[in-house]
Length: 490
Image (cartoon, rainbow, N blue to C red; front, side, top):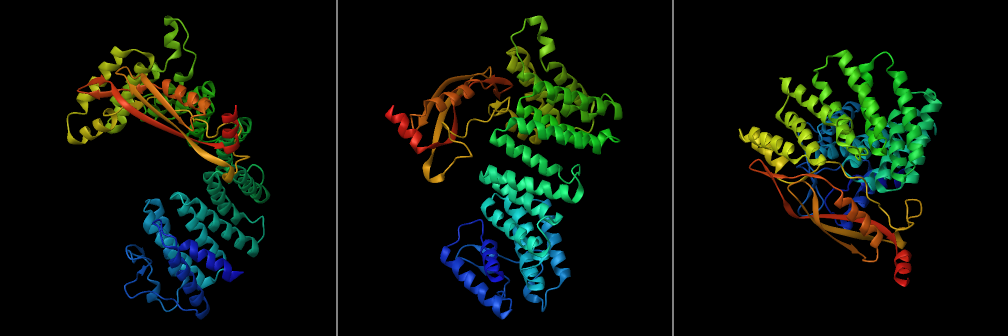
């Protein structure tokens, strides 16, 4: 069993992000088995292992523990390599982190063997890295191996299982195995309850992952219930420190926005603003972001009101206050300042107040034309149309297909391709849509409706909004092959 797991882990560990020929994997596997039995470590003199003619998989990097120079690897060297891995992850230097993680695995095998917590820890580190770089299938295998080792050493309810279970759940979630991901996250939460009680704070991240899973599954009622549970735990945790509660409140508001509970979102941001005003002052830079988010929440209200009520149903006043604070703040970057100014101009575009929007865009254009650094920002913000409101998710499946009944051998991928123009007023025009297969007319209509309802910050040239033509958008979806056959028959 140990040999089989070791062989599987070595194969996973040897996978480079680039393509590697299968026959060389097989060679590497046999080489590993040989080394496993004779108990020797083999490295090339130049500290590299070449797996094909063009790509070097491992190579010596700065401060890496050079295993071939060690007579007998020590725990100190393993600790150093794990710490190096953590530093590289924090700096998002993923290629070097990959080498560090694999080196730590090799050290753990040599020092402690493959039935050790240290080896499981090394596998968890590699799995975390693989999740971060999108290698979800391989990450899931490593997390499963780590879980199996920990369960064999300790028990099935040991608190050390929580981290690999969280990693495994994330892998399953990103692969699309939503039901399995939810089971995994629930198991992790249950372990925290057994060890730390039902109101423990270790479970917070797990509960947030369950919320994300339920959201993707469309279980909105469950999402709201768990969010309330998270909110109660946060209030209990930070009842003596309202400032420390702010990050949790912001997360809560973000979820309220995603769920479409915009009135609740505004109430949360009112609370955030009040906490900042009471603990700092009414011109604190910390107010800019919640004021902008509060203003944007007004995009999602009933606008069929008479003109004299417009001021009550627009985010204009919150955007203006954010700008006033930004203008009084000395330690604000050009990016922060321009982001704040653009929110008001975008608001006017959305409301159809084109004259007001043009004046602000012209002012921003002049401001960003005064230095090379600002010209880069001008190109970033104004050279192409920018969607003002983040698009709502489009359906991933056609007909009755869902995550619960998807079967890869019975499904296929369809596409909806859209071309359109954006006017100088930020409105979508001349929409042309094609579906493939063409029979999915309903999906075509849904996508077309989404594109037509978009509002953009128009492209700005010489301080003036201009039209942009020939923009494109593609939406992919899954459908049952039998559904397509039924449509064609009818």
